[in-house]
Length: 115
Length: 113
Image 1 (cartoon, rainbow over the protein chains, first blue to last red):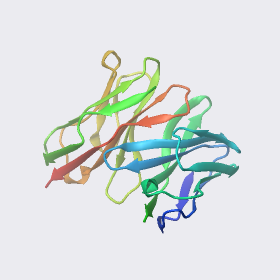
Image 2 (image 1 turned 180 degrees about the horizontal axis):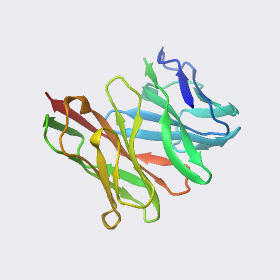
Image 3 (image 1 turned 30 degrees about the vertical axis):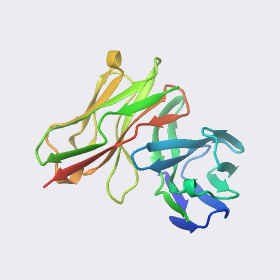
Image 4 (image 1 turned 45 degrees about the vertical axis):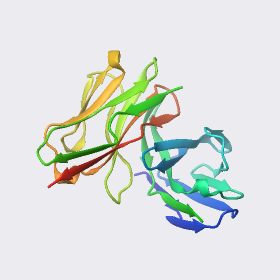
């Protein structure tokens, strides 16, 4: 069965420091991968998605970037964190059946606090 | 652009009360519709989904949702809630064949025992 892992689970970083959140998926190949940010009262904001190695689509201009160095690895990064980057970051993969796109499966999330 | 609107941000109910959470989306084409749930301390998981066919779909734990195309709505219902239904509920939509799933702001449900 497919599993998705994120780390670290919790991170406290000073303003201006770099960031790297990692997500890996097991049990599937060539998954569509996503980074969302969850903020209270604002639902899930789609940040990036990737349909393959090296292919990144950005949804919201911001201080963050994403990379997909391997088929089942998706990384969220920042060179210099801002206070506004604090939040709960969720990685997800999209189950597909042929050309039918299905539901998302989410990781446990990474809670980032920028001080 | 697609958007999803959930009408209630916070709902408080007593056990055995009926539940209906509203969800409307804005997109004129064919869509797939979802309700996800996040129980306290747990990760987001799928509650139910609609792709095509019968507009009344049933999910886990006695939940159901009805797709009304003319109203662009996909409301979630449960006839009798339990304390264990306390959670945050998210409506979501993706365009059929599209890669992006857009979520509503979520509704926090608290069920009093």
